[in-house]
Image 1: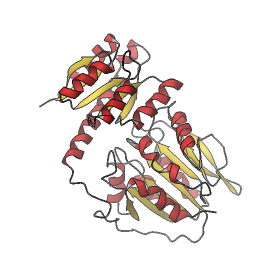
Image 2: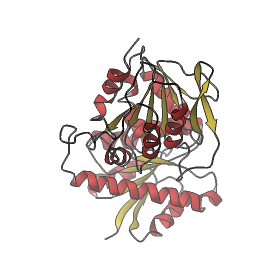
Image 3: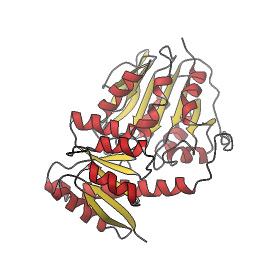
Image 4: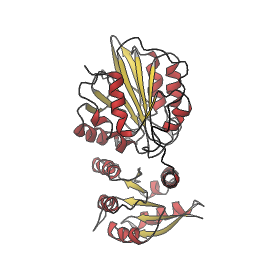
Length: 353
């Protein structure tokens, strides 16, 4: 049976293109279309869809207003937002995730891009993931953090000092999850934090600014060559790999313009790998919600030469239990915690000054 998709966009041309993309997959069908959020809300109140593709800027009721109504009315259909790559569009994309959207894809700039393979492949991948995740969650037996024990520790080095760094990897569901982590870190945290969130170029700055508004620690999009300081969170810019390099007695952010790895740029494995040659006494590795296994190989490599402490988000609180599952099954996790306890676990391990 094919999954039913609702497409909501005020552009008749984009509705047609998105219908063609969805119908090109033999497991999906574009069942209905709407030209604004008001039409979509009426359909979603009375009909069952497996996913919604949603534009933001529409007349009568825009995408953010629709998401707000869905949240208030507990309508759980997964929503994939199509967002423009502008400052306003990036802010709206972050807001849509806060309002419960599963993920977003960048809206094409023109009809040539709209009919190109990149937009098609990205849209299908995210819609398929949204449907798969919703199915898994509905069938889940709600495994708790207490039921799921930490993995066996393999060849772990013991930390011999208090000079630590926190390295966080997150993907699908991450922008919203990070709002339950970063704002709960104390301003006097005794470590810098480097963070890879899988996100297109242009969107990470908006996410950093939003988290900075909510947080006691300073949160910023990382700049090439800047010196790492305790109590500051450095977010990898979308479309840029980041590494941590020694520079005299300090450590600095170093940009890496290698091609995407497994379709990912930034890639968390590069960040974790770079910490192998750092002077930090211990790296606190945190793996949050996300598809795939990014971070696992980097952490395993890092753990061969450097003391690490690994914290993984639990299954129940993860939007997608892919990346946390991968590192858990690798057998190097020290703590499996629910999302609301991640900040506490980080602070307990690195301390405050």
